Image 1 (cartoon, rainbow, N blue to C red):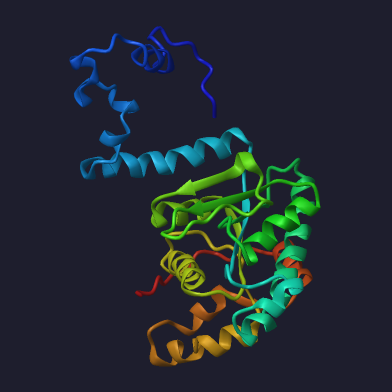
Image 2 (image 1 turned 180 degrees about the vertical axis):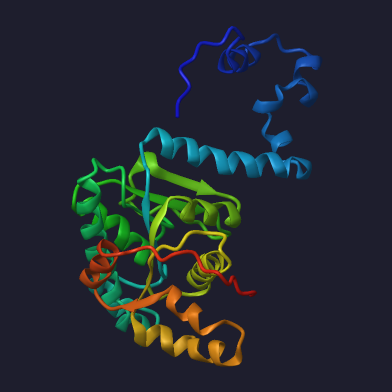
Length: 280
């Protein structure tokens, strides 16, 4: 929350502005003379990585607190999945076939945003990775209903801009994947996963691992499209091999439609903590 208490100390913004207008001398041009907090080269040093990690955790946290966001509904899914209108340009027939999930994600985001607006936009706020594909569909569905949505973008080697449907003041950019994934889950009331690639799998399995090991409270984890998920992951084989327990297969469930997912979230009853926390 914003701290409105008055401080007897001189304001950092004022000192930064003052330092920008000091006389130009060899001493003031020296990198060592720059204010540490206003020196980007200093902040990017390898030794400052712990500070950057803390800043990347803190900046979105403060902004979301100030925006009154209390809980979220997470949408994970592939950036390459096209909208149905664009499916003819998909790279593969499979991607074209998966375009139905764009509309399903958009419809689901609409349903969750209606629920969010009942709380004046504080609860059940849609959060995506801020990119194209399923992520765009989620932010777009929230905008369809006149609600807010969050986008957690990340700097990638190829140029990427946030999709145009993210609420601008709730659009964030990250350097660290780990901190970004923390922000996905810190306020999560539900995790909804649509077909996707490596990134989607990474995010999904991290969430399942945190829940499985008791490091995160149980929330609904809903996988859209049973046929897709059972084709790429042999869930039963993991249980049969003993690398997970049979009970772990209950940490998620398959859904096919936005309405089915919304009903499951609406009727969710948290289960008691497990007495046996299995190893990984």
